[in-house]
Length: 263
Ligand code: CIR
Image 1 (tube, rainbow, N blue to C red):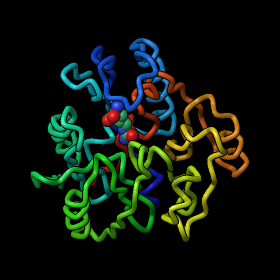
Image 2 (image 1 turned 60 degrees about the horizontal axis):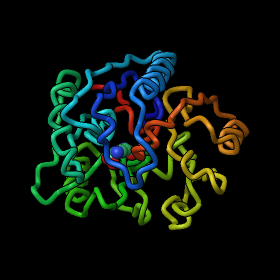
Image 3 (image 1 turned 180 degrees about the horizontal axis):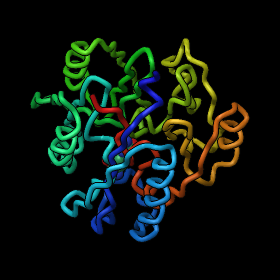
């Protein structure tokens, strides 16, 4: 049973009105809440279509980036690890997520070091290892602490690098199946995917690299025809989901859910 592509559950959080104040590297316009909600509904419906239980949490107005739940935890078959987001305005989101994971998992542990920072967007779980990109949000202390915790559950963690100027490691890549990774060329050029089959994101469509494999479906952002065709040609079933509003806040498909099979 694949631990990196098959899941019984997902958790999402509805976007809050405060999303207009969400973090962004470059201001490309204010996100429209009702359009973001419509995209979010389509996203949740696609997850449900695969047979999974999707828990939709209420909006959190105090956290403008709260819709991006992926950054708050790492969910593994043995248990969940609550993160310590490196963005100060997002630190409290992790504590908001913890009780929901405790309700589903027997084991929930957390990153606690005051110098440790790590966000779920920098973590790619494959069948054989956990890749964690050091970034402006995820530091060496956070990675070392996570490495110790997941080793207790038998997982091997490999530290890699998120390219400069890229928010998270998974902003630039995603797992399509046990051996296949969709990646931007700027990321795969760093050599971090040696031993995997890499499908390159066509030049100019870098924003399409963040997809998710969720059971039998690949969810990808709409509007990237070359990437869509490359994924389809490789034999994957896919669904395009509008992402224009989350993209204004540097968010994509993976950021919008925690995906797991609780133990
Ligand atoms: C942030 O800057 O933290 C949010 N505006 C976007 C977070 C996207 N999350 C992700 O890639 N996992």
